[in-house]
Length: 159
Image 1: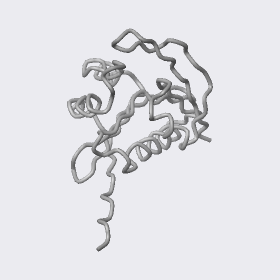
Image 2: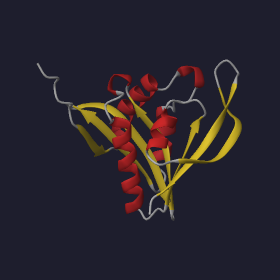
Image 3: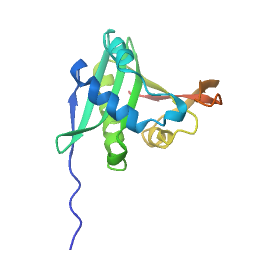
């Protein structure tokens, strides 16, 4: 008996109407000990800014991941990326990241930037997708227990 074929990941442009789903995914995906999840009003405020876009990933019609990014002039920034725990290891994060890079190129960005907490498992994904460390902010993140964590600034060329 052979294993079932992996279900395809579908990507679509998101909008404000997707924010309840985005927040559910973010709450499930982000460890609450670090307080990194944004609130729905924070997401809505960001989406109101020029150059910001949202991508939604789904499998079998169920939202399972998202990415929010922005582009300005010749630079783009990945603001948020999350995959629901049940969909991890299925390529959702990589598909979203590659789609953000492609859209950033379409928007004429030469570089894609992001910031991530040191020790976050997503760092491995970013490295596989060609991101390199370009900076560090010491003590930038504060966990709910008061402990601080460094932020890594990563970037990858798009051209």
